[in-house]
Length: 252
Image (cartoon, rainbow, N blue to C red; front, side):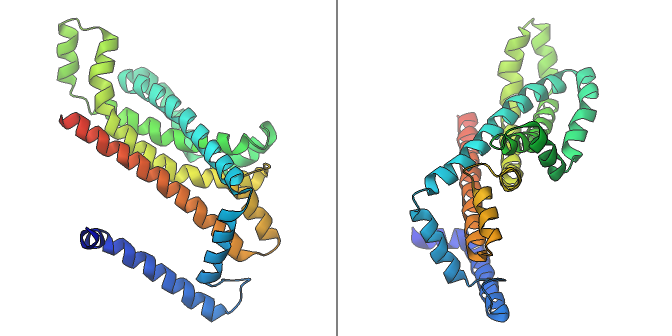
């Protein structure tokens, strides 16, 4: 069991070891905790963060904001994506809006959100607009992947339009939704952290990173960064797990 696990994941394990080794070499080269702290010192700092009484509130606030932004973007992306995929005229109308949202720099969204919203909602707004284009575009591609012959046959037999969407389009777009969600979460967590760093809500990983940066606690900044990466990794794994469940459901 252990041997098969190592064989399956050894490239990733080697990659992690290589990064840690490079980190250690850089720490030895600069020999300054203000530039590159040693990995073991950062690990100790991270363990201390885990035992801090406010850790759950800080990490939980960031997770809640990320989840809220993802849910909002997913609902809008799926709804608008389905309509755009089915209605070419609406797709032509909405395409410039989608391109604009995708092209606007994250920092510009953050600066505008700081003017419009309270600090706690700024990261949610940024994450929502950052993740929405990925999900919406993937849903549109999923709708277009449906065989037109199946839709035409369903219409010929006068199948209800809502039933066509429910039993033809939605099963077809599910893999695309999972793929879009995975990509969206990857970029969305970065947007959440950027929003927290700029808006400074009472609780949040970005808030703590900014506070530690002010006091030049580089090891704490890196420790919070690793925690944010771990959270993103866990959510991506959950998405991939749901993808495997979907594939097994389709095969039965």
